[in-house]
Image (cartoon, rainbow, N blue to C red; front, top):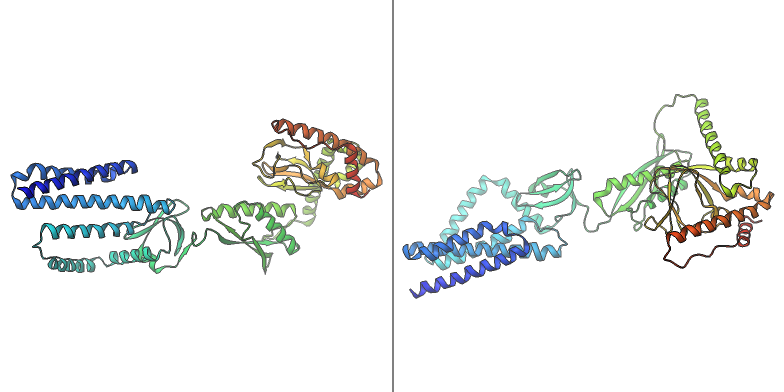
Length: 498
């Protein structure tokens, strides 16, 4: 009777401790739903043990105690699994889950040990050697009946031990590319970039080549081939491609992009671009951004990307069309120059002379036409589209203006060679007219009085820009001093060598 009371007291303390601890941790981890069935079984077995024990035989009491201890062990192992893998290890892995096969091995090992101790204590007369032999026989029969399943299980354990990849890694397994989302006893699940799931048996993965794009480093190199017209010098092509890569923020500067010529093809000289990225999941988008920038760079530099077609149009028609487009661009230049104050002192003939030597350029959305702090000697007029003006070196700095058709910028750099005072970025695909200071050099040497007119125009423009900057940055009391007209005239003379 004393032993029974002692056993009841021990079971009561165990039940209370397990229930209290389980509820405390499960509430903290928001995982009560995962343990609802186990807690219900514990409550049921505890009730039978406490209230039905006096009315049943001693043999049944032992069975109830064994069931109760087994339930305690199961809940304790599940709680330990939850704390170890969902809290401690997952926290150290940066939030990545632990493979299911590893967790299952841990749980079943502890449960097997607990079951062995319960049987050994509650039923000391049971021959565990016979039980082990029976288990081996049953395992042999089941093994022959499920060789594929066992093969996947062993392969899963091998993959877990060797760890060629972890959950969250981007991998290539055979012909499949995806992000590892789960690893079970039987298979590994990948999520592709199309958000589809591919379930691959572990035995199949063990026989395939595995490429891990997330280890040992997040930086990975990729290549892209580009064909260019035979008439373009290789160094000019390399410079344009490297500038295009530099304009894509997600392309790394260390390691730096590389460009090399690898083939003289039937229709083009073929170049290979090698660049490095960190986000493999965005590879296609980064490649697209880089190719976008290459197109705009090539367009501005008059670099032609050839394609194998037979052009049956008469060359006269092609040349006539190009001449018409050039004439339309020059006509637009003449009109716009006449509306800009700094060129108002030029005669019509002089403006026409300047307009005929302006070049039309195209910039893609997001490209910087000029950047604050860079050296410059060119002037721009917006012909089509729009650009935003920022006080800092990137688009995160305050925007002070939005320039549209007929608006202009860069006059200070054109006439004095000063560094850019702001960053100008294309809001959408933007066509601009570009004027180099060399176009004005001969004109100023022939007519030196124009330098004074330019200095007056620059003085008025500088005052206008200073007012605009103060209105944007009213809290900042420190502003750049406005240059005097005499100082501007001196800079113009020095820059043009007058």
